[in-house]
Length: 235
Ligand code: SAM
Image 1: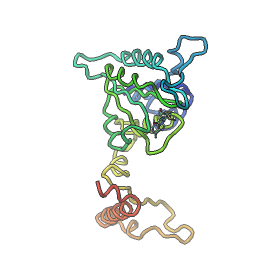
Image 2 (image 1 turned 90 degrees about the horizontal axis):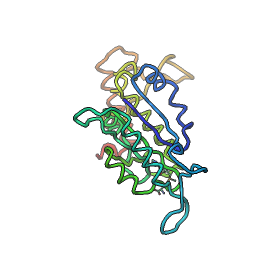
Image 3 (image 1 turned 135 degrees about the vertical axis):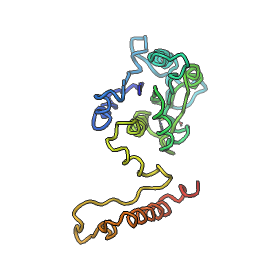
Image 4 (image 1 turned 45 degrees about the vertical axis):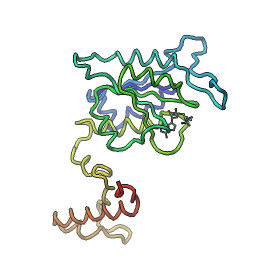
């Protein structure tokens, strides 16, 4: 999978060279490139923002650098005849659809993702309209709160998507049993020692009875989801 990220703070993404996603890049499973939006400016100050039409607080990201960046990056991957490599262009936004495990799974199936990190009051609206001519456009929110910029949201999305690329996580079974994969939260996990500070591991986990362990874990998933996230059971 190819992922391009455009930001005015490219060094935010240094962390993506670590751990599993770093290894995925080393082994060629993930081709990740981070770009500085200012490289597509042409003035001496490398300006990416301006005052909002209609007035109001804050600045808005100018359309010109975004237009040039997206034109270049969307055309950077060779397109098969059927057009299937048209990129999916994701703009993180608190006003977008909420990012879920199902979104991560869907996007993990794409060949080319481009992420455009907003700053200030956001990006000139015409950029989203223009981008729709280059690929599928998605405005995606990390949650119902406002961040200073899209970088942290994109870091989270790239990590959630990247670990679903086949081969990135060594044991694929560990992906199946996780929270949100089947609409429930994961059951509690324990490791050695079996007694720690007088706290015992639930005896069923030491029983060796796989059926009983599976039943106990399922009940824990339901109980935990009912208690912490009843909204998931209502869906
Ligand atoms: N004025 C915008 C609004 O009210 O919808 C918020 C702009 S925010 C300060 C600047 C940038 O941070 C946004 O363009 C977006 O890229 C990012 N951002 C902020 N909150 C986010 C969230 N919950 N999810 C994803 N991205 C977010």
